[in-house]
Length: 282
Image (cartoon, rainbow, N blue to C red):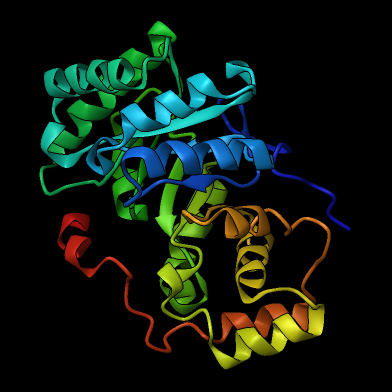
């Protein structure tokens, strides 16, 4: 039986350890962001995920600074937005994120989307390699990269991404299998954003049936499914009860039959929950 908790970790190829579950902050702003991150840290989360484009780095940094949890025990991730790509721009954008967060270093810095321009993408990665070399980003990685993007990056880089953060939930499972397989072959950890499909499918009858069988909530079942596919899920909520509830996924397991039933949901209205950004994948 898996006995991990929110403070337990998965080892990255960088040698750093990342918490086995994270707290997402997309679309949470102002006092609500400070409060939600504080609640998450109090509940036991040790991974907090933000991004420049989320517009809440200051609030996330404030919550981290106010927390009784030592900074060294908190794993902070932020991301380089597409318009900030390019070597010089990426260096400046990182400095600005660090300033907004009011931190001395970032645990994980990601390229948020691959974007359309191959050279700008590579230049951005080379900037991240420099930042990593300076010690201001303990690990570096990417987000929304396909195997094609990762293979291309491997040809022109010194450091293998520690993480690829992708959308991952049962309804797009088939689509993400090639990325999961490639990342596994290169020891790239996979983080799962939108693991609850932004609530779009959470009341699906198959998920509800499995939840009844294991006596858990539908959300806990979806998160457990992501964990058993060797990903680090990053659920997001602004509600204290749900924030705490989402941590309750390390004291039970889904059977192979239950996993297969959830896998089979792939393709059932399996559109990305972020259709506006799909164009940024290319």
